[in-house]
Length: 265
Image (cartoon, rainbow, N blue to C red; front, side, top):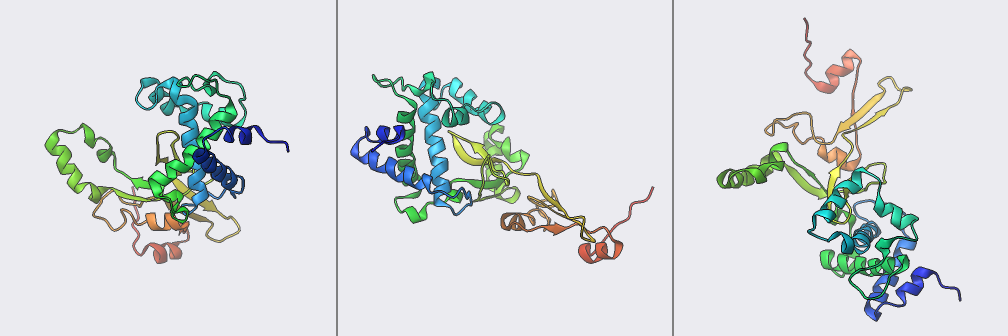
């Protein structure tokens, strides 16, 4: 029987790793592509990409602490993607060889090892019960103020004090779906963390066949005041895929907003 290079590479692994790699490969072959937050296969795909990135580039670039590795992670999301390039099309590359071993690895060997690693990674992070594997347990939304982002640069007391009140300003973590390739994008740093980096600033639908054509939703809320009831009122409908109407006709404006204010010169 003709065997694919990846299957031949899996057969060279130890018994335990071979079993894990076979499980990962079979699941990914049947994966529908749904990157919903409850999907175990989405978690597996993302764990594979994580493991593949480290297996391919980590040995040459000094994973996890070398400056070259950190620069690689920083540039990958914003420039030409060496990760996707190597996975999808580049059969010949010096990066396929694992410099920490005496043998010379090929692309199939790295993919086989990464498949086995992805199962071990999820078992370590989410447990051995496959039913408990969910993408949203790894991949989360976290709405954070700019002040919180620079809190680590504060002095000791200020940093401690901000930590106590951080939950007043910030919201999350909450399960996230999607990734770099989905319409509802939710990017993260492949090879480092699954924390969501970027999401759509606003979802907007305009149907010109309707009398009131516009529906939209901001991902957080319409107020920058944490004490306001409108500070995070957009998060629940954001997660559920709901929208807010944006009426233009005067009577509908009053019905929708309750109060209106007219600014005149």
